[in-house]
Image 1 (tube, rainbow, N blue to C red):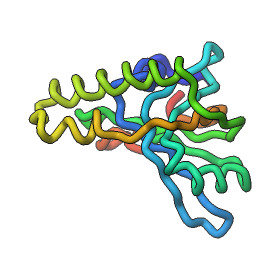
Image 2 (spheres, rainbow, N blue to C red; image 1 turned 90 degrees about the vertical axis):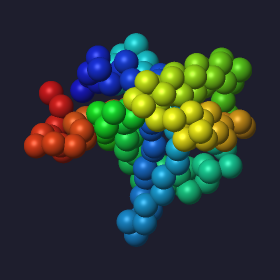
Image 3 (cartoon, helix red, strand yellow; image 1 turned 135 degrees about the horizontal axis):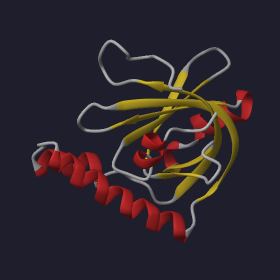
Length: 156
């Protein structure tokens, strides 16, 4: 499955993103994502989460390997990728630079959508992200999640 160009465009920013995993007994865990990238194959994705919030997510990934990435703009356009965990590692200086660009794009997007600065700042620039963890997965399914009659439909 190749990730659509629209989703590829959003992942580096300005989309709000969360990863979701589940335990063996179906308890969910999620973590805010602070930046990411789609690799050249348009199937592999790396996202960055705060190391402090990573243990439940990593535990689940190591047990069952299933991951979902929610991707949403401040305007409510939204997508979801589901896939299989490949690896994780500490973030690098290059990742941190990517995250700074992501945070700036996210903040600008929230302002452009009409959110006042005092509301937008904590939810865009206020994310804890360093030290961070890079999680890489292979996307296998993609869904439209924008509210409306097509929400939940698989993307081609």
